[in-house]
Image (cartoon, rainbow, N blue to C red; front, side, top):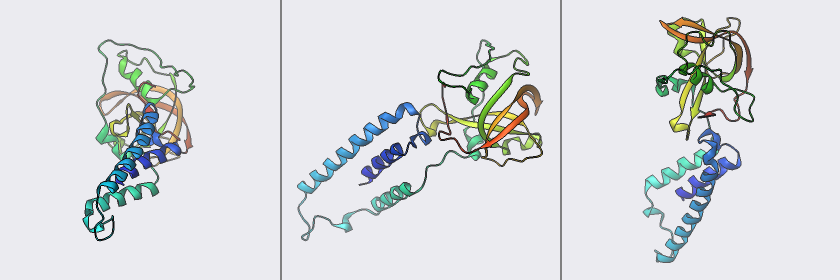
Length: 236
C-alpha cells in the first residue's frame, strides 16, 4: 500500500503539473511511466499474496501482524497528499552554495536567450561572468533577471545590497545549486527574504568584502508571484 501511495502521489503531481517542484522536466515522462508500471506491479503483488495466504481466524486480514512502521509510513504518505509542494527556502542558500568555477581559458561574451525564450537566466549570466577574466567587461551592460530575495548572506556587507537568487537543478531538487547576483538596495522598499522580483538594471563591478563582484545598479524592481516553475534548469 505504501508503494501504491508513493506512485499515486507522483501521478497526482504530474496531473497537477507540479513535478517541476522536484525534478527536471526531461524526467517527468519517465517518472509517470515508472509510476504507472509500479502501481500495476504492486496490485499484482497484492493479488498474489491474497491467493497464497490462508485465512486466519476466518479473515484474510490480521491487523495485529502489520508493523507499526508500516502504519507510520502510510500516514506520512497520506499527509503528503494534503500538503502542497514547496520550493527550497532562501535559508538553504548557504548550505547548498558551491564555490564559483572559473574556466581555464577566458571567454568573454554577453549571454543570449535560448531558443524559444526571450529572457536570460541568472545561471547563464553568472556562468558568463565567471568565465570572463577581463575586468569590468560587463560594466554598463543591461540585465533583466527573475529570482527571489536573500538578505541574510549580505549582512556582513552592510545593508546597501541584497541578493537576487534562483536554484538551478540538473536532475532534481536534491542536487540543486543556488545562483545569485548582488543588487543595490532601494531604501524606499525593503523586500523580505523569499520575495520574488523581476530586476532590471545595469551591471557594475564593485569591491564587496574585499572581492570584486558584479552588482546590478540603478535597479527597476517589480514584485511578482512565485513562478509556476521556480527552478532554473541546468544548461538552459
